[in-house]
Image (cartoon, rainbow, N blue to C red; front, side, top):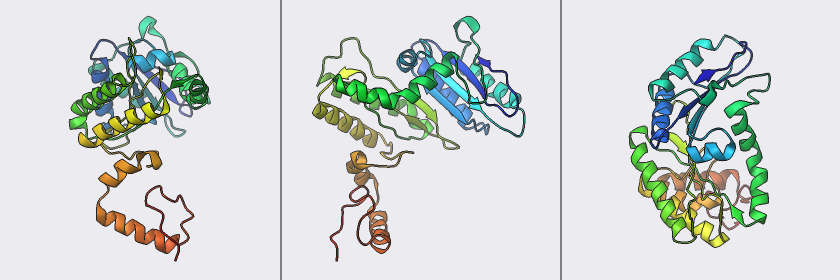
Length: 271
């Protein structure tokens, strides 16, 4: 685990690995502690071993932490963040690799590898889809004290849905956790993985995962809003009084129904 050298005006990125079968769980504990520390990192992302390997960031669960400021040096913030991660079982990446920073952020090491994979994902998704390979994503939030049970339940439900529709072989599902600022929650992202599936099967798998989210107390909404794909779950989660108030506001502000019709509310006939 290490912090990169840099000036106060440049971002600083730290990388920690969490080896072993329980690496992701220990990494999630580190994220919880960071979330409640008041350090407020600009980025705090935990990758499970599969996602880390797929992005070239390492072979174990990997935690990426970044701070940035044009006002003050960041050494104390990063040192404390790395101390917290080490206390949860984080270790220095193999070979003692350092993550460098520059004017545009980390470009090499584990952080740079993940950054490249993250930025290329939307473009690769379309290419993979043409080849019949599907990578599906959804996100949620859950209180920290329920995260472990929630994570295991959602992942198992998704695995079962995938196994019922496709031969997985040795493939597994991937999950990442990301700090949800000042809240005591983890946003996570189970993926159907690189598996050849038909569109209908993907929809059924996502529906099964969404059902598990709601059943286990997670929210179907997230920082990318709701969208049509999540509308059925949102309808179940949303209180009727709020739905009525939202519908009344939309009738007053958008009487023609031209703004995102059918996303949060059913389209209303024109008067």
